[in-house]
Length: 66
Length: 476
Image 1: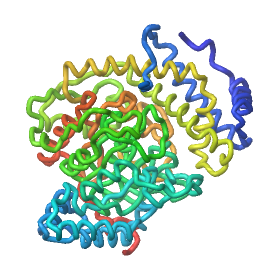
Image 2 (image 1 turned 90 degrees about the horizontal axis):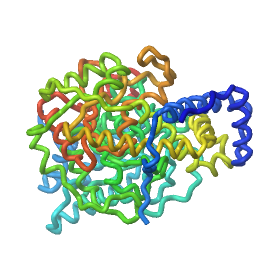
Image 3 (image 1 turned 180 degrees about the vertical axis):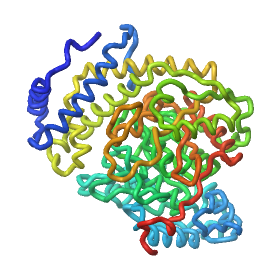
Image 4 (image 1 turned 60 degrees about the vertical axis):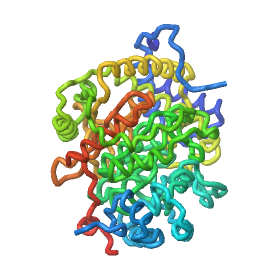
């Protein structure tokens, strides 16, 4: 699995605006540049994981004991 | 000159022995600690709260216990302090934030505080930290940075910066910190103390303010391995109040320390670790490896991806923990924390799920390495303590933000919950460096045995910083 393409800066900014609305977060204009930078770093981390093959049988690892 | 229980360099073990023997009162030990804190804390800003009246009352109760002929605990009269995300009855648990100061005071102490005090230790206060523990620098926009006692214009390391600074400066011989991605090990390395991040689930987190519940650990920092192990042993045991706390019975490490490295297969982590550390950080590991008589190297697979997965889980889970606060109090956050948390709130669930699946894969691969070796050595940080305020540094030819990257070597191990002891080394008269000593899950004993061997042989040591000789130190 790889991510289809790297979003443009505009697409990332649109994603931030939409998600902030969805979550009820207010993002001041002066915070945006830094947040977008961090979103890009996170996307790079996700890309590293996306391009690594994982068998379907490998389960997530959070701990829960019923 | 003989060390007395009132000296800043006195080990916890000697304090406890002297108090138990009646050579000195717990009250005198605590008065001396409180006087040190009052005199020296302004130079390093390690403490955010001092609970003097409580500490004196606790100490007096220990002295009364002794007067009645009762047996005292393994930490009798030992002053300690806790990172301010750990509940102290009567204090709002600020977790390094401005926002949390409005919380109601904690009604009871965290489990680990209760257990240390049950062993006779005496809580003297709460310690500075990076906001909400999302930090490797020890800087705090609200309380000011905790400062490295060995060089006051350098970082203490985070996020348990006050814990590292308080122990290194001799204000207390023992402190508690939390470690989600390296927040005990980074300040231990930069401040030159011993530290222990136990196996995930080994020590109860009940009564601590969460950051990333999949990764959060609590653990001790101290200036000797014996003190570290004594505190660790006193804190072990199941706790139904923490849903991830182990149900295993305690595995005391103290009785095993003197076995040292006998029979242990020790290897140095290669690849990722060798590439990104500077020459001094690698030299510290090489010195420890030579001392331990090992030339074996071991390649841990896919470390960069492990770090990436921990990074994603941290941002996503951290954002979820703070979502309400981000809605209602966003301007009151440290901007460096807020902006990363908001970015974390945008992460698609599928990315986090994949990180958790990769975690399973990585855990299985790394645990398999422990069929070949018992202990792995790795650098703790890529360099010595940067200067306070330094924003970027160069790793492997790439300029990177300091705040997020001081923990590149610690993050992959907490990601899979392995126990890691941190041994501080002094290569020269400059700032300390740390070596991570990593073992299989639930084998804290092995990490502490190796740390003990390094300390016993003089290779690792945690001397008290001479604050009076440091530029910028305030006159007491």
